[in-house]
Length: 561
Image (cartoon, rainbow, N blue to C red):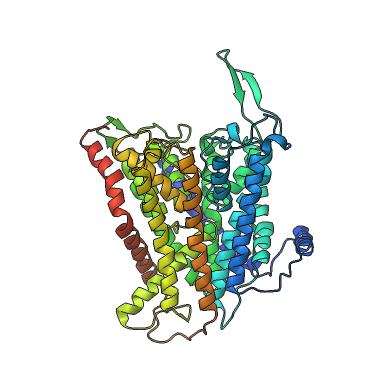
């Protein structure tokens, strides 16, 4: 650890604290329909007129869910068509062929669900056109869908005896036009100014200083990198993702790309506080998220700096970002797995067992440590509902959250939200471990090979998209199974959340009494952290003990495998 790294950490946390209320206030105004941008206001109106949408016509939770599902199915079909016809479409200067159906399906489901799991190398597989009008578009729309679902849950929590949750089409349109698009445009210009490529020119053939011939991949990367970070999407334009110098060329771009991942999810906690009428409610969630983030980073960073008896190395740079150092590799990894981003500037497969386990645990907790855009907020609100239910059991009172009584229906759906993804992770891992098609793609034997499989399905179900690089996922087995579990991970969250929002929205708001458990206090934040950790530990510790825990113990004994 050196002073420069500590200063950077302080700047990162300070910037996060500063931007949270600023961005949160703007998003609250946009999502409430109170704030717009004049230059884009006419675009919003045009979209409504062309599509025949009445933004004032609100939806029940069932109609809202139906709109979400229809929007996602249509998105999958459009991306699938673009991938499987790219050889005949414009903006393909390298004449890349059409994608085979298994890879196209897995990729389409992945990008529409904000997962961006990539079983391919972008510069060798996707044309400029596919990257722009299929993948980049879904980076915006999948993030906007997450925001829309989160604001629907907020309305359910805060409205009195309401049968509606807003209008999905209006929420997606406003999130895209007034939040994601302006921020991404500004960020893309900054990235391009720092050297991130943004061009439609074909790949460049150059001669190296040694006299060898090399082909440099190019493309409209800056525009996609901006939204992949801000929208917590994570899919790289190039195969090396943010470890590629054309995606992440300077220390400033590295800092900004890490910061951008947290910016909107953190701001949404403040948005929640404003829309609930009590900013302390938002800060309580922010505080719980921040503590979990700092704790994970505080475990992973020293683990990467520690001496490894198996290799004889201290602070090993194997697989790390050599330009920016160990700390920046660990910080990027912690932030990207705390959210559903999945962008990387280092190979997680090369991390120490403990640091690799921290990355896995971050995702296993439900991507609620700031989490994905929108999905992190509604995920931690589900845990908040479980927390007040447990607190209510302790004192013998009917649990309440924001004045709404939490009853059997809400708890049942909350348990579904927590357990179904866990079943998907562990079930898919078990299938892969006992089938030839599953283990044939593993590069390493022993506990690390198990970790590669466990990490892959954890990342898929958590809609993260990062991977241990030792697993070859471009096989029919992994492409088809990934499409299934990614969809389960996304919609096992969205369906229960909207059902809970509809149930709570129809209830009256009870005024607080002397026995009401305050949910805007540090005590509640601590209890919330405890519930999140206990649920994650009880569910996944047996699997973790077979992978990174065993690997760490073997490494400490000086054994390799």
